Length: 180
Image (cartoon, rainbow, N blue to C red; front, side, top):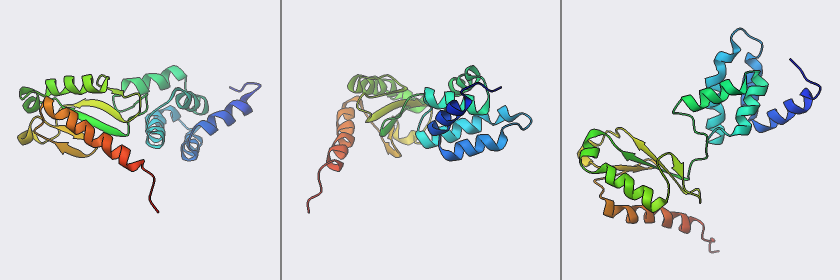
């Protein structure tokens, strides 16, 4: 189906997506069951942008000729897809059995209080995102928190301020002007 302004809509949608995603959509457009490529397309968009914005999902829907409701439904159904930008540092609190028994819930509560966010959210300054996970495979260190790819454990609620400060200070140091 085309509209009078399809050329403008198509150009705007192509501008909202990386060129490789547009090429991928075009490669499968018009083939049998082209909509089966939706998850792969959304993975590509998220890999490039870090999350799926409303503009990007609309662009995918328009270019792939898939209803926006279906695109949004897939993006919200699968836990892997993020609809908001992630923070520079990703904090994962292990809530697996070993960690939970040793107080991981209290660590999660402390992090939420100190950061002013809930699990699944990002701080307003974009520095931290907070997630929970079921197991990080380090039960001997329980309870553990993983920041980016660094495991910290055993951690107590009292350790959280120091841990956050470590990553906040890294950001301040990296923003200092270089001395010549």
